[in-house]
Image (cartoon, rainbow, N blue to C red; front, side):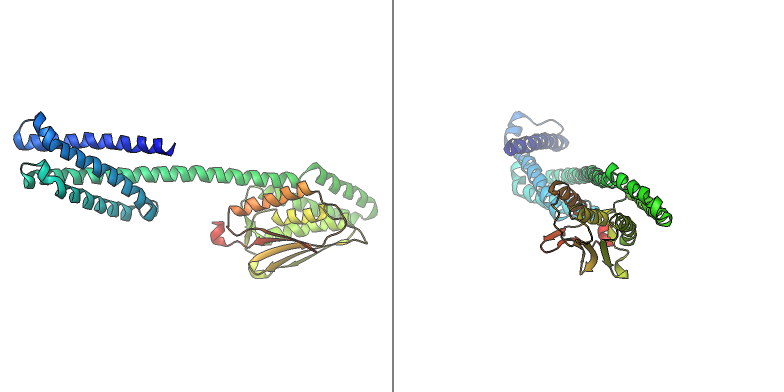
Length: 340
């Protein structure tokens, strides 16, 4: 497969170089003699020029592939243009010096004409090659960026669906219903915090990143709902330095980890659940104690995989998971540069 592609690519290039060489030869001979070259001239001198242009075309194209890796067009267009043109000139005039005595009756005058033609042709080729490469690069980059953004939106949509699922809303409304007869003030506070969580979810689900400060405020509101629901047998500790509060984080990441902890552990007076969110060096670590509940592994793994994939957009540092006496997930702290 790769061989056939290479044959087609360089075969077409060789044909184009042959045609260009033939045009050069016709121009040089006609300008010197006033008539077109005969068969004997083609067979002796013309074949050398055709060989020159064919070899030069293939070598120039192959060297451009290498230069594209060393000095990419999208980084320094002008420097890449100058560097490529100079290198092509070295190749062209080096080959011309080697074979000019086989091509021209008057090596000085005819070489000068051919040299001018080669300079103009190679400069035009280099300009068009650079423009084509840049267009292709930005077209591919744009398409890849759109695919990436779509994937991000799909992942965040999955998070959104889990936050406003009928099961979540049913639990919240059931809690409100029971509170109305016990403590109207607490019921009012519960409704307000529930509205805060829904407002955050609906307002941030399209954003790639949010400040850690906002995510923590969202988690605190969500924690209040859980405390009321589980009769304050859930305890959460947040210990994040103020200097890190503007650190970017994918929205609803912390809430998803807290929700997983609640889903997969029994919570009661005899089995309280402790959750902590602390900064540990360059990692934000979310840990929870473990009770006797049997985890629903499938939904648990889906949530973790969602977080893994969302972080891959921004950093090569992995999301770490430790499942020992406690369950712990380490989220790498992102920088503003990574968020740009």
